[in-house]
Amino acid sequence: MMGFSYIGSFSVIAPILSIYLKDVIGTQVETIGLITAMFFVTSALTKLLLGVFAGGKKTITFLFFAFMIFAICPAFYPLTDSIVALVVLRVAQGFAYAFIGTASLILAALAISHLERDKGVSTYTASLSLGLLAGPAITTLSIPVFGISNTFYLATIVGFIGIFASFFLHTKLSAIERDWQIVGVTFERESTWSKISTVARNHMFGIAFIGNLAFFILFGVLLVYGPLYAKERLDFSDELVSALFLLYYIATTITRFSTGKIVQKVGKPTLMMVGTLLAGLLALTLRIVANDLFFAGIFASIGAIQGVLFPVGSLLIAQYIKPSRNVFANSLYLMAVDVGQGIAPLITAGVVVQHGLESSFIVAGIISALAALLLILLSMHKST
Image (cartoon, rainbow, N blue to C red; front, side):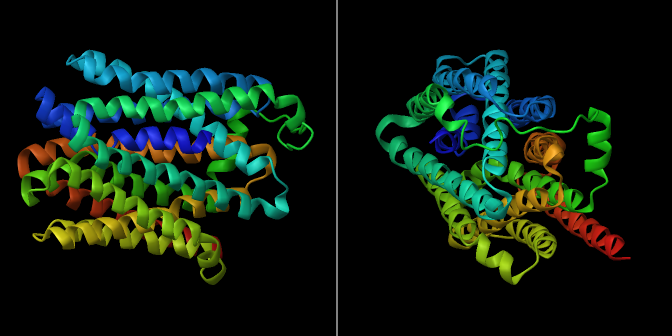
């Protein structure tokens, strides 16, 4: 329920934020990128600090307060047209988002036996897809009835589900402790620098990190400039833009629920390399698209790739990183997701202003292609 809540609340906002900032508030394109980026930059920095915790009652207590911050922030979005206030709200929500996401994934990876870890992580990441689907579905239905501004309040309502779930989890902690491996696990003492050095030198962690960093740079571009491109170049209405993201996450969900079967047929490192390269090629194709159905099809195909890449990276870490370093490795891994989405609008804003919205797709595609080449080199180095 917690995973569904925070992802669902996030994905209610995702399809409409850049449209709201541009059409309702009148924000410049480069400022839209900054406001969007602050959420993910804050989340990334927070996740780096979260690598020191290993679960328990304090973690679950803070989940409750993190959900309160995360759920309330969207309700203030339509109440202000101040850029500074919006940046502050994005920073606060990004902090809460980081804690909720990191804690949830770590608990999913470590709270079950290692024999069922692949299945458990896959199931957890698949359950997040329900939130990904719910968000744009709510937005698509809400915009014609309530308008863009009032749709932010629905994100708050979805977030309150997580508040109740985390409160329930805290009250039931004493009973859950008997079953959770993460509560009461004894980890060997190791310095933070030693963890960083060891994790960073692990080839499988490198493959997971680089692959997802490149992909989420691409996704960050789609998140910020995809809605604007669809409206201005393809004449999509606001609700059709939201439906576009719903289609994207439907594709994500289908492949995510199939990840276990796909991994059995194709190795995890190979999947990461192929998926990264294919995502880059699809992003480059978006540049030349003039047909709305073709654009939607490519958009959904990139969503299908996301459904595979993220859980595969989690599985690589669960399989190749020692349990005593798993918490820190997952924090760094999740940083790749936020860093990618955070820097994407920042590194492409200048290009977009000079050469148009579609130029952002070219930058994202080139980055993914270069990342795929780096993954191949990493894999070759490991085998020598």
